[in-house]
Length: 322
Figure 1 (cartoon, rainbow, N blue to C red):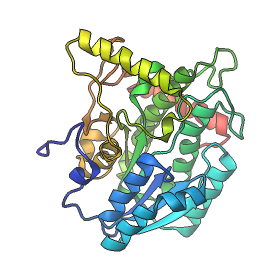
Figure 2 (figure 1 turned 90 degrees about the vertical axis):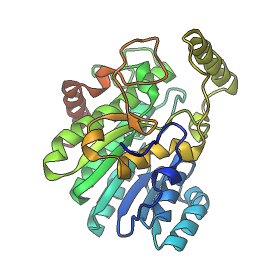
Figure 3 (figure 1 turned 60 degrees about the vertical axis):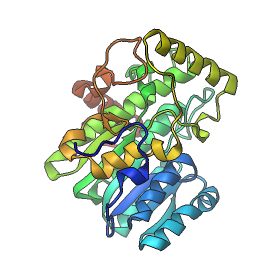
């Protein structure tokens, strides 16, 4: 690729010179952090953005910058209610969008939760698997008819997928001990596997999907974590990096964190990223060494058979066939 995009690239760097006038984009999780920045930069380049959020009042306040960007560029922002932890809300949101009948050029499944205490969604699913994976699984499948040829789906995963593969036998931790970051890892692996299988199912009609890792960013996502724990974790990673002769971890800014989402959704050659996992504005390499926890993707997260099995399990769990 000619553009030298990387870990420090921002959303504005990635979309410099890009005109998104007439493009319609759905972004979930627009009440804070990456979701707001993603919506802002897309609107700033003329896109009509539909922003989904559980708390519309919070989103209304958080997206003032998006509305300003849209007003300056000819883009627009519309907010819709979406609680990914409640499938009744997910279905109502999807059904309203389908009834409206306006096609999308891009869907960015950005919303999520990380490492909360054990809990269940309204439908009885473990909170992280239910919210991060199953909520988006139902939403995107229900609006698939609105994705026209040439459109893309970007599923926000995480380097945290390396904490754990999905557990197809016990997705809700009914027989295994709940470990917050293992559950997070399962849900993020599921986000990647979803992109793999969605891409396989829809590529013949010109709709492609990819998964991305935004990088380490200090956002509301970490609200369930003790700051002392985060610092201990960072110290451990930096000690490993030093031993391997690598530089210490640097937090990304929010515009740097959202860059890979818009790169994969708008700028990257589609054949390069479709069905793949991307980080720092490039396609990640396969890394099987368990000690390598700073870059790369595990093969289990891109396994087509695993992706099909997860899809079938997800359909059974939500009671719908897509």
